[in-house]
Image 1: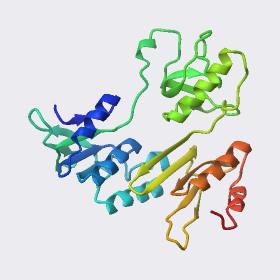
Image 2: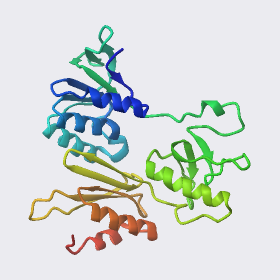
Image 3: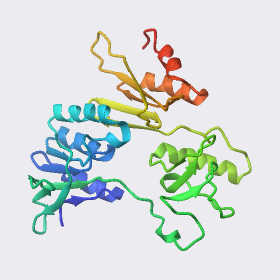
Image 4: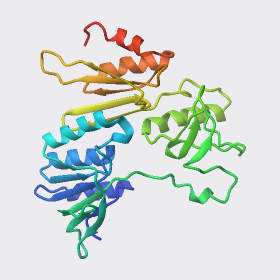
Length: 285
């Protein structure tokens, strides 16, 4: 059906951009980072935008309900309609999108529908091999495929055991793919583990006038937010996440310097909440 964009390829993204015409109605199915960035861009271009999200708030699974609610409020202040928690039932139209019917029966008018509901690793072609392809390709900490000699996997498809941890992670950020390539190349050449072998996951997202930057992993067990807003009206903060023993991740809201400082702390050693709090105890830019 014309007007539906799953955003699986660069070509689909380019075609979508040509459809973002002021006055049109856009429904985004999925309130993750991709969906919200599309919503932000479209709203600023003058489209009427609705985001349909099955969780209570956008980004709840990734960043928790409090931050997800703050992001939702940002979008609503800028004219985006957030419908949550609700799922899309079907797209309506004859040959071209006309509306989206939701699970609660509401029908939302739409000229364009963007489907941003996540991704799965394209590993079906390896299903008959000896490789473990449960949620990607299982690798060791050097991106070497487990159980297969001289085969490496990098990027979104690599499910990798992090050093000093039993956790397996498959991370869908381009910074992670760059770090993987460095790790794999050094291992192939016999140059050792290299400086990035334990690189922390990192990504950012620009939505309206806010830059979100995240490093590490999310854990709701311990949460500490530090307000960095100034007398000049800069709306900025950093939220730090811990697992009860140490800090495992942080999200900065319009505060690049803070995420940079926290990232250096996390890369250096095991850091507690008290260490981070002390680092932010005195005023700084």
